[in-house]
Image (cartoon, rainbow, N blue to C red):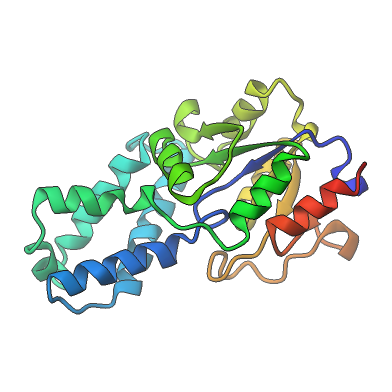
Length: 245
């Protein structure tokens, strides 16, 4: 595997790549709706919440202002959603404590089916660490919930910005005492992959259902594309890394 030769650490995007963000949030909203006898388009609620996160993190990464903690950001977006005419009747049923608890859904997202076995296998081959826009407490809680065996937890929160700001990628690389080409970014979002490549990191793309709409066909360099490696699971990636020996 010459594409991954010299790689000593894998840095993982988490939301959507390691865990099923949309599915997990939708399922919890459905349960809450049943509890309060309220029927709504919970998939659209989850999509709107996630879209707000993406739009805000990218805006701040480009120099805009806003909260450095995704927990704070998620809560602000949640309040905005619950204030809309469509969702205010539901919001009126939720106390402050209930809203606090709902906001913590992002701390207990379920992993994709290959995530836990794949990460345990990968940990035998190299360093595995998060590099997420999620704040540290969110990532730690999520790791405990979904059994994600990270060697280190890096959050954009540590670097005063969000991906795809180059300083986020370079900050994590520096803390690992490595050079960018010794690290590979693993993500289900091509913008993340290409930003990492822009600072000299290797790249691994893993498609996840519904996570990268509009990205088109993603190809590895061996297939004429611009991504070092494209895999369909973390277990497949672990098998590729094991071939280097």
